[in-house]
Image 1 (tube, rainbow, N blue to C red):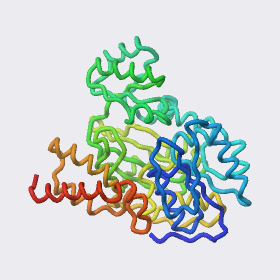
Image 2: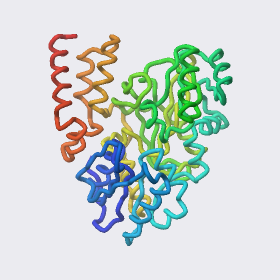
Image 3: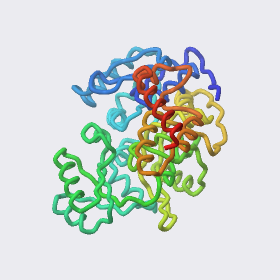
Image 4: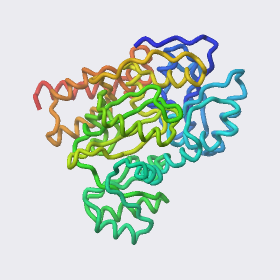
Length: 405
């Protein structure tokens, strides 16, 4: 899709931060002529760069935390005549921008639910309790408050089970995975003790049976709970394969999942870009809530490529500009994170669940990618070690395809 062009003097956009999500947002806006300022952390995190950022800024977040982010944004925002559009791309930044919204709204325009609703959404327990109050079905879920509670849950919970944090905004810094899998009561108690030792509250959920392709994600841009534009995709593969982030996603149309998700957004009086993930439970065909994310997500470049440019729609709406054209949602549009998808394939192939031929056919047929783009090769080169990781992957693929293994 060729992006609509905005005027050269249109407001800047500030993207917090240039991870996979931020790169997708920056490309969407930059291709439309928006002047994008990208931000990265000072230390300890991967740093990516896009040619679509006219400027990059560094946040010393580890030392200063949320108060430091607020000061950083106030100092940055004082330099503009026209309020920039502010787009946080992580739960951490959604939380901090929301908590400091009174002072930041003087300098920036941004779309978030109200402060209390952001708190509800970012606290997975409160999010699930809110969903249950609005008749949205959930996996069987327990909320142990102590080790004694965890032992009681261990005797009642079906296995395998999944331990996930109430708040994921900094969980990955400690555990490097979305949650902890427990296949036995002993593993559940050990997982609870690990989380408690790191000062995290966790819920325990049954694992809804079925393949990852039963995961249905509905996303969009919303104003006062009403959809301005929507997109849907499912997850044929994710990394890690059982509990991870989608690394191969395909656009889909599921009207029941759409209705459940849009009803949830409406109940939240949702503002901005967000996504709801449901899973079809094959035991009774119900749709069960996995989570709602109150921000752009890893595959944000997919709706843009498919003609539903959510970052540009949000930008134009907040800037008071005409919205870009919105394409009809169609099935079969594929997005791929090549390196993570390869890792997922290796594990699935080891299990006998995916052949080389099946994987290569799906990979080469992708319509858009997490990092690869002909007009902005920098992020892809950085992620692949300037081609070294990619060359190894392609050599393995060639050998595997030739051997038919």
